[in-house]
Image (cartoon, rainbow, N blue to C red):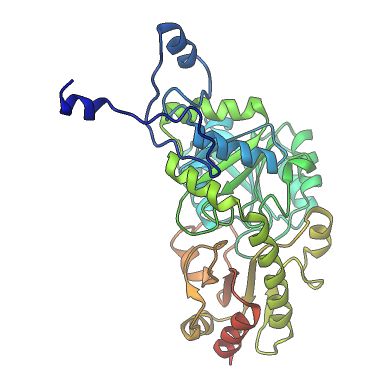
Length: 383
């Protein structure tokens, strides 16, 4: 065999190795010994070792981990949280079908629902997530899907999951919950009767700001429906991003516990500060959603929102004065990040039916730093 032929064909096999750390399967396809094995794999839904657009061992390991901690039967990943949401909408909502969505949703989700509604692909009606009557009225008419987010980004609105799931079920609608802020360690929506749970795994799940990923978890039947459309449309997570997410999730328990504790302490201090107009954090007894959060959450998450004096100018001034806390659109990582939602949301969603954040709102995504260091930075910026 010539050297160039050898280099074109050589591979690495370690059949007896037992690596301590997960191994990334960075391959686009897999080989087969015979036609029968090839045909069997080609005809098996979600097979992890045929072609990476269909599935991949590293990607499957990530999905199985999410399913396990969300108490789901299965999960399906995507290149981002928005890709996962878009695939879900295209799969479970029939053409021209009806979606009922919470007013206080992440702006990207709102923008997608607005775009689909404007094009006639779906109809979308909104409800106030803090009002049982509003939800019951919205689902008095048939719907394909109920879209929830709790705590909702950025106002941290809390929705009663048990009640919402029951109302959706009685209306014949599937329910999906964006659980990104809470994480499965603080809240598991499927335990309260919801059908699907959605994450931007870019945030706390991967937790290091180095990969973009999304995932949906639910029943075998629903996940297979999502997979059938996703693999035809080419909506799949690459193995290296899945490997980064797996690596990050190894420390999810430690990170979430730290962020829960730090966020609660900072929220208490912000609430006590006279120059802060209001603080939204479900762990505070004063928060409108606190009682519901106590019933359905094991911890309250690492995101805080506070209003300075009701003006965008003041919010921007506070952000400009921060030194160690960085300005960024994300959260859930090792570094504490702050953003002015009013400025960011304005470019994403202009729906008259969605709830825009208050002009003076600042969203804080708590990282892993020492609480006193963070408070010193905030205290100085607010002075």
